[in-house]
Amino acid sequence: MMKVTIYANSNPKSKKVATELHTKLTAAGFEIDDYAPDLVLSVGGDGTLLSAFHHYSDMVDQVRFVGVHTGHLGFYTDWRDYEIDQLIAGLKDDNGQSVTYPLLSVEITYADTGETDHYLALNESTLKKLGSTMVADVYIQDELFERFRGDGLCVSTPTGSTAYNKSVGGAVIHPRLDALQMAEIASINNRVFRTLGSPVIVAPYETITIKPQQQSHFIFTADQMDTQPRPIQQIRYSIANRRIAFAQHRHNRFWQRVETSFIGLEEDQ
Ligand code: NAP
Ligand code: MN
Image 1: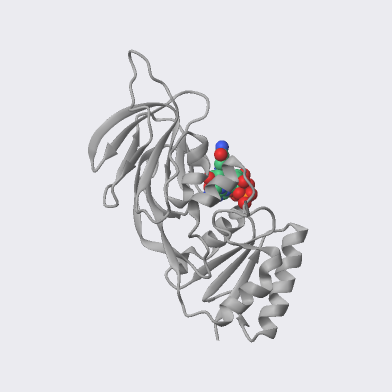
Image 2: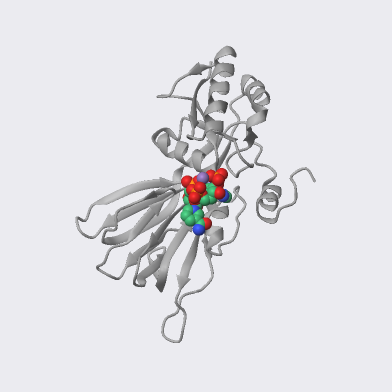
């Protein structure tokens, strides 16, 4: 029998739904296993699914995810809280099918110690500077592309394209594409300083490397995680070898999801 875990946020409605899921899954014969689950059921919002992903990211090759939304419908969250019986019925008949999406691999080297850390991100990673302008060279496939001056840069996955990336003017990318997008955050463009000024989407095998040209401290983020400001030598972004898998997905109507979330017609219209 499938081993499942329930990962809920702290909102009272999510806790209630988590309890209901626990009771009904146990009654249906599923084993609850928080340490080595086959399936992670996140209960909350897209942000909760992001947290669940990071909690289980070491075993992302072995698990599948399902997102239950306790508010409006999200991008990673296909199921609503009132559809639990239908979801459990689907899981009982589950044949291991999944849809998978690319993840962002982040390799960050710090200038102070020279050490390198690795991260996986599901939505995006950003490099920013507070106060004064960030100056950083951007390389695509190890070739210098531009010298960026501005607030920062955001590198996102296709599924993350509707999150922070969209707020900074990036394109919405269909999640079945394997691609990375880099979007600028308030670049300075004038007669002296020049960047491309538009988002770029690179091919699946291409890497993007950002090398700050200052000794000062930078804010580095990966999804919800941010770090203490620290001098950074470089950050190299690529599509990870590992992907995230979703079970019982209903992601096939992506553009309708985009329309409902951002333009605003009711979903059943
Ligand atoms: P949050 O502040 O609650 O998230 C901001 C909003 O982004 C929430 O409405 C969240 O949905 C939504 N969201 C998350 N992933 C999404 C996706 N892939 N597509 C469309 N919308 C998405 O923080 P959080 O819930 O922990 O999420 C962290 C994410 O927030 C970050 O990865 C970043 O993308 C985003 N963020 C956006 C901005 C911005 O737009 N200026 C700034 C910082 C962070 P739910 O309400 O369903 O959780
Ligand atoms: Mn949230």
